[in-house]
Amino acid sequence: MSASDGVLGGIWAVIATVFVYRTSYDGSASAALSRMAATLLSFFLCLIYLLILPVGAVGLAAMIGLSALGATLLGRPQDAVTASITTAIVLGVASLSPHNVWQQPILRLVDTAVGTLVGLGTAWIALHLTAAGAGAGPA
Image (tube, rainbow, N blue to C red; front, side, top):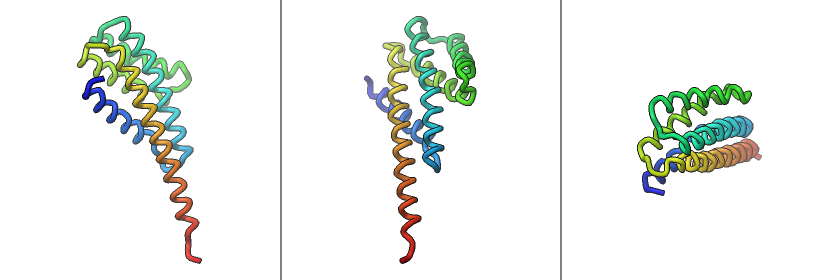
């Protein structure tokens, strides 16, 4: 893994954390499910594409459309935009570094999982800290 992959992975994990963190744990859990569903769809589509074809403008456009369509057909139309954005970024990054492009979907899936777990953990901690603070009134 190159240094730029490490930086991109860190940024990707932070984006997932921000995407998932909400003011309630239920909201964060729902956002985590949405983020992971969209990322898994994009992962499978991008991995298959990158194992077969090189990245090009027509393929990129087709894969973005297929990501949105796939999310909708899988009964998750709310994830169509996230899946499409994820696909665009994964394929865009793959086009910048044409060596071992098939690794990009795998790396971004791992980064998203890490960021999602951090977002859920942060929401859980914040919920418990605010609940503890709310119960610590004057005696």
